Length: 520
Image 1 (cartoon, one colour):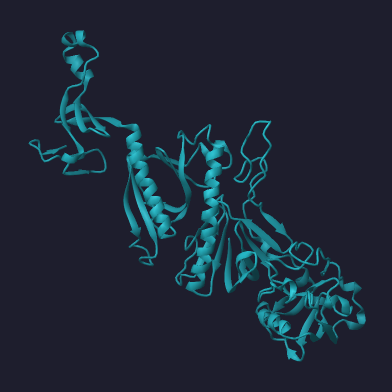
Image 2 (cartoon, helix red, strand yellow):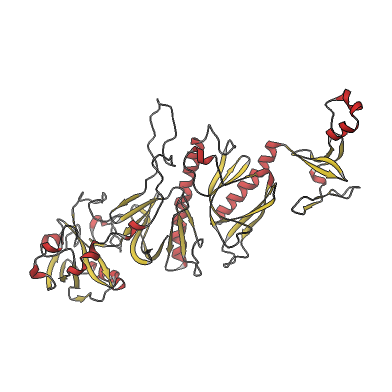
């Protein structure tokens, strides 16, 4: 699990949202940059790039179109560039005469590219401000007097010895065109500069290559040209991890306590990995959540269309048609303190629950739970009055009759729109299932006699004498009239039903207000 604290938010060209955050990896905080676009969330190690005029789209965190100015940056107008790092500026190649000695280096910023350096460290990291990258051909590289591993002690006379990372970034950006850097090469800092990006340690789903996944083209005949994938795959390049958001689950306060209501969580499609974001305040948390939820909701609709297309011939778990799917937080009545991600699918006749996103057609045929809509009803919809944040959680409950008794499930939606959508799908699904199946029959005892209770979609309730028993008692009389028609003991339309209840086990009480009174 990775936990992230947002410290600043700003928009940028080409991305929906971006901000400077901290990520907790192996119990240590590391600054990263987060960028959200229409298909992915990108986490980048925050080695702030000091090139404040590049592309005219650099935000306050030194992000250029959501990317670093390095040899992987396809957004740069300058094309691919090589970068000097601690692996190229080896300590043994740095002249001994300058090691651990203060130097003053004058740098003239370029119109495109600024200083052309990346920095790491800062007071909060208990490290000096260190040059971690020098971009070849730009201003710092042209001086031939700066090295990766140089500690920046001051800029134009402003002391940076006790500066935080952000303070150093701002000082370098405000330094003007002519910049004088007081630096000192520190060999002992080389391991820190070389250290790999913490974002590379953030675990995320990597489906096996033989496993079909959403975004891959559906199976077609050999004569049909294959369709290109529509979803970006997981990307880890150097200091950047790009997480595709299709069928990810964005929620709040599921795995970690959130008493200040400032967190949001991103769960992987396999439900095994989580990134937790924490923002400076509730408004910024809501803003981030709304943006990410909007992206994942749009992608979920695309995924639904793909699943329908890929399962059109085989159906899903005995159903022919998927009508809605998506992630919810779920728990049973016996798990009141344990929300967990649940992929819920509504078909024309069933409510299917999956522990994770199925990969391949066979996995779709094996849900963790299958509940007939005909035996399911919605029993609550609205704020969770028992939650620690009364009125902030939106949930609904379902009750399903099974052979083992009544099963109650609680589901939590993320927005009022989601809640309305899910409750409408389930209620409409129950009605459509009843209309399609028309009639259900079960054996019962009525006034000590074995009978059949018949519930018909249009005709209502009927209790019929069991024809097998009656045939056994009057075998000779019935022989000439086979198959016999069951004798109707009572019959009522739905509008006559005044009240119904049950004991949750085996007793059903129906009150039709007639001369029979309450029927048990």
